[in-house]
Structures are given as C-alpha cells and as structure tokens.
Length: 182
Image (cartoon, rainbow, N blue to C red; front, side, top):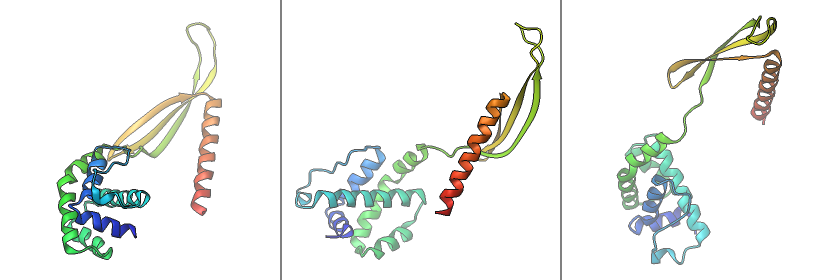
C-alpha cells in the first residue's frame, strides 16, 4: 500500500490522520500520536508514520508558502485525491491554518547578514595600573541587516584574536566552497 493511498483512506475516515497531523504540528509535539481509531489498527505502523510525516510536510509547506485552494487542490489532484478528499483536506487545513502560521512565525529567525566591515588600529598607551602599555588593538565594526533593519556590531580584539578570527573565516569560506561544488 502506497503512502498516498494510506493518506487518502484515512482522510476519507473523517480526516483522522490529517487532524492528528494538524494538531501535532500546531502543538509542537515530537511524539507520533494518532487518535485511537479502529481503522488504523490494521495499517503498518511504519507506513502510518510515513503518511503522517508526508502530511505534516505538505501542510507546513502549504502554510509557509500561503498556498491557496487552487494550489493545494492541484497538488492533491496529482496524487489522485478525489474531490471529496480534497475538500476534507482543505477544510481541515483552513481550520488550523492560523495556528500553524503562528507556530511557523515563532520558529527561529534569519541570522543578520553582514553588508560591510570596517576596522581601525588603535593603541593602548596607558592604563590604571601601568604608566606605559603601548599595546595595539583593533576596533572592528560590522554593518549588518536583519529583516530590513540595519545595525552596527562593534567589538575590539588584539592582533592574535584578529588573526584567529580571519583564519576561522577562511576555513568557513573553504567549507562553503567545497559544499557548493558537490
């Protein structure tokens, strides 16, 4: 039995898999739990979990991309869903859509993007304990953008710390380059 067939059968059964998927996704549960349905007892549990995962992925992607009825219907028609099944799926999806949108909005955020970097060499001439220090340090300023707003991140570091930072950035750049070539 294929995953889509299992999904179709259970969506026909009053949407119990879909409803459990929506509830599970919206409550951030990490445990696979389906309602105690006698129709699901004979289904292979691995296949049922795969169906649940497929339905969860489909639902979350639909919410993420704000898919309308026609987009959802055309995707489900490609999977050979009947009009009745599509209607059950869509109505259940709409019922939980706001809840899922709030969930997706609360998950993570993009890290700031560095637009520009500037630096300046400074010297510690004196400090409170010693009259002469003559120690160089760098003032680093990173101009970043996050969700449309710009922010400057400023920090100081010694020559050794800056060399360490540059080395780590070069390593990261090499890793990204290797990953993009695969």
